[in-house]
Length: 199
Image 1: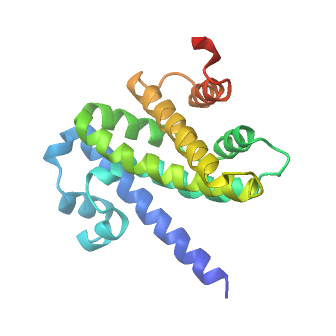
Image 2: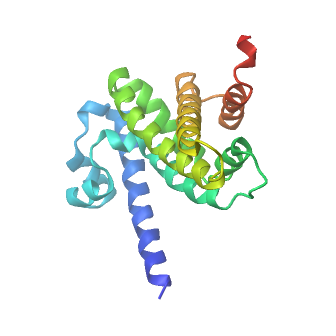
């Protein structure tokens, strides 16, 4: 009985990835504004309706790497040992993410080259909010006995989410040439140290 949902999920992910790859290739060769959803769907061998089942807008394709990471992070954090600090659990969860670096690189490059900074900022606010929700829930559950846990969890979730988004966007703006894991770890260390470097 469990094999059917897993097969369905695998097909769904495969279709989404095919759409994403077709879109990134089309955006790179013809420009973001010159490609229609109809063309993207046709190139991926699906209907326009199927496209919209996976992506609410054409721009959403450029941010799918984040959405996939949000889903992955929630599951990864749930499996981390209670003895780990929040920072170590988040870094370990991210390090285990099975992403295709080239696809993430293409999406990051496309975001910086193809859409305006204002549109990127709007999408990133939504993405960051999604990360913050996952992280807030994780902190709230892990440290349920702390006084003022709701405030602590919300501040921690928002701060760590901001660090993760900034790390990936910094990597993208700088040509995606450095090690993303190292940038993320360095960014988390800044937060963890209370920005001691600024003292």
